[in-house]
Image (cartoon, rainbow, N blue to C red; front, side):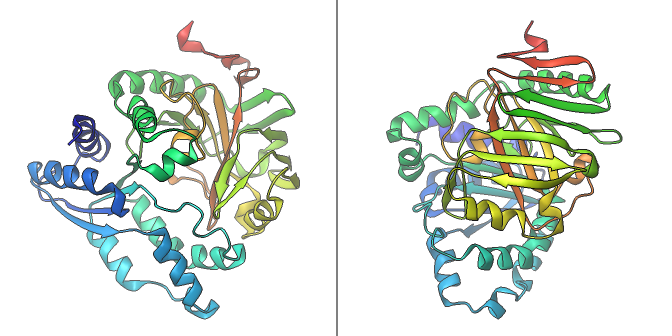
Amino acid sequence: MDSRIVEHAKILVEWSTEVQEGDMVIIRAHPDAHDLVVALNREIAKAGAVPMVLMSSEEASRAFFDGASDETLKIFPEHQKAAVEAADVFIGVSSPVNTKAMANVDPKRQMISRKTRKELSDIIMDKRWCGTVHPCRTLAQQANMSLNEYQDFVYSATLIDWEKASENMYLMKEHLESHNDIRFIGPETDLHASTEGRIWVASDGKHNMPSGEVFTAPVEDTVEGHIYFDIPFMQQGKVIEGVRLTFENGEVVDYSAEKNEEVLESIINTDEGSRYLGEMAIGTNRGIKEYTLNMLFDEKIGNTIHCALGRAYKDCNGTNDSAVHVDMIKDMKEGKVLAGDEVIYEKGKYFYEE
């Protein structure tokens, strides 16, 4: 087994989820993540905890939608609730075979399912949880890389000095929390919001691996301005490009996308909360050099910011609620981030790098 897989598992168990003796641990993983699941089972057992492995499959999900009526999609999975409620730790491992399996499923039907299962997500969010990726050919192809290149890409972002990265992110958190507002300025972008009473979270690998972002939930009705998200992202099996959003009193009042605008429209119209921002964030991971249509990596890219429509994280004291949380990313190489009158980032440099 590649030694990097073992190191990845150790980071997930020891750093990210801090597995303790007696913990019940759920691992939900795609079949192609077999090697990482094996390594995780070993490390979890060493910690004196008990793992349970659940298979995840995008093809199985598609089969469910093909066979299910709209009424079936509204049935809450009580058996899944029982499992996640009994767990202390949840680790999700993505290593898909077909990222487009859901592409031709009606977005409205997908949203019905998301709304039905929202309670499951809420339960998991209250656990020690972490999501990660195991390198596979599908994700390598999506990133326009060979498998070997993609393995190097993943591990350069994951196997870093997380204690040092955490130190820098907590320094940024302190500076951001000394002000009550945030502003993103860049090409086709001037977006600002109040952050009074909100908490900035240093995402240092505890919930996502890799990680590398500092984020908050803006005061819901204070988001004003416009923003152009120039990095493509994938939702509902489709790539969305060139999103432009305009906000007034916190709400999306105008929107467009250069590609797959109908998917963006379905996201915005999911529910009342999906028209408001649940997150504003700054990416800090210098080990991630390019986007790969995988949000776990893309939202962490250094020199970027991102915003999410929908659900706010409780850690931030956010109150916006929604069945969705959809991140969108902007390259800020020619932009800057202000908190009050303090420059947090400008044209490729964070304040702590000066």
